[in-house]
Structures are given as C-alpha cells and as structure tokens.
Image 1 (cartoon, helix red, strand yellow):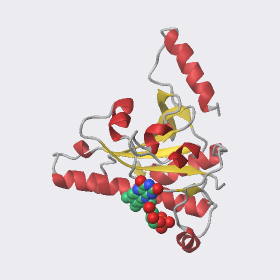
Image 2 (cartoon, helix red, strand yellow):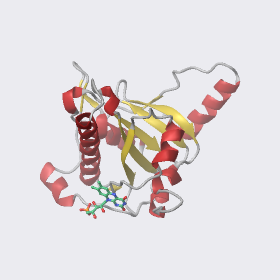
Image 3 (cartoon, protein in one colour):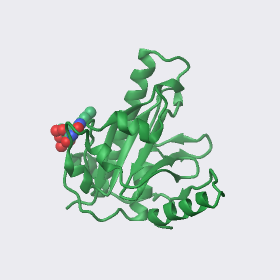
Image 4 (cartoon, protein in one colour):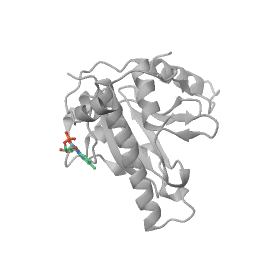
Length: 216
Ligand SMILES: Cc1cc2nc3c(=O)[nH]c(=O)nc-3n(C[C@H](O)[C@H](O)[C@H](O)COP(=O)(O)O)c2cc1C
C-alpha cells in the first residue's frame, strides 16, 4: 500500500494537472478475522491511555482498527460492526494523521483524503484549552454524527445520532484494549475549526475523538 504522504503528493500532482478525480481513494488491507485478546481479557484490560509511541500504526492495525469501528461485517446487506438506530449509518469516521485527514469509507474498506497536512492540533483542543498529548498519537479518530440523516431533525434524532457515535467509540476502545493499543475517548476539540476544515453540514456534530497509537 502507498504511504499516506505519497497519496497526497500524487493527488497534488493530479489536481494541478487538471486531472482531478473524485476517485482518489486509498485501499486498506483486508481486515483480520482472528487475533487479539478474548472478550473477557479485553474487558479486564479496557482503560484510557494518554501516552503514545510516535510509531505509525502498521497497515494491518489501521485496517483492523477502522473495521472494528465501522467496517462492513455482513456483506449481504452492508451492515456494520457498530449498530446504528434504524441502521441509518449516520456516523462518519475521520482519521487525522501527520500527513493529512481521511474519511473512512466502509464500502470497499478504503480511505478518502479530505484535507492535507497535520491537523491534529484541532483535535487536541482550542486556543483556550488544549491537551498536547494528542499531538503525540500517530492516529486520531473522530466520530461525526449526522442527525439530519434521520427522517426528521428532532431532539430524538440528535439523541440517537450522538448515542451511535458513543457506541462506535466504545468499539474503538475495546478493539484497542484487545489489540494492546493505547487510546482515550475525548470530548475536547476545536469543533468550529474542525467543522470548517471538513466542510461538515450545519447539523453535523463532532462527538468524540480518539487518539490511538502503540503504547509508549
Ligand atoms: C464522553 C467522554 C469524554 C471524555 N473527554 C475527555 C477529554 O476531553 N480529555 C481526556 O483526557 N479524557 C477524556 N475522557 C476520558 C475520561 O477522562 C476517562 O474515561 C475516565 O477518567 C475514566 O478512565 P478510564 O477510561 O481509564 O476508565 C472522556 C471520556 C468520555 C467517556
């Protein structure tokens, strides 16, 4: 698989050559079907960690992490590893790295580049309050809830969408506990700046972010 840095380089060349295409997806390796601790060992191991090695996740660990969060585990009807109310699948998952920001696309298990450069400071916090340990995590996941995907915008739609983002976050925490990765679920971030960067719809809510890496 190409490195994320090379992908952005290729994108820049392609766009400047007026050959821009919406199909600049990065394929992920196939997710594993085995491995990790047992469910009970995982639960005994679940905890928050705020220290990370700066080593990038392996292609396999990144693939498995995203599959655990929101991958398609029933190909016949496209349903996901994390449940959503009415199967609306209204949670988007973004991946912030040193190289750029990517959206996880469960269909085809791939990444779509959405922003260039290191944007992890927006995940760390605001100018008023920031947690700098986030900058040491090689991968920061971000769950974005889209309550507008329910038939009607309402308090109930918002409640379901935010709940679904929480469920996805717990999938991520349990995967990390079972695979020996460090993670912490976080509400702190610069929501306005992230919304602008990712061009989120007005109704979308950046719910939780999760810095992930190998233990220090
Ligand atoms: C909704 C939610 C928001 C959180 N926000 C933050 C945060 O902004 N920064 C942080 O360092 N930890 C954050 N945490 C992590 C909690 O502080 C942590 O889960 C709690 O102290 C319990 O520790 P444990 O996860 O090791 O059991 C958050 C956890 C949850 C569930």
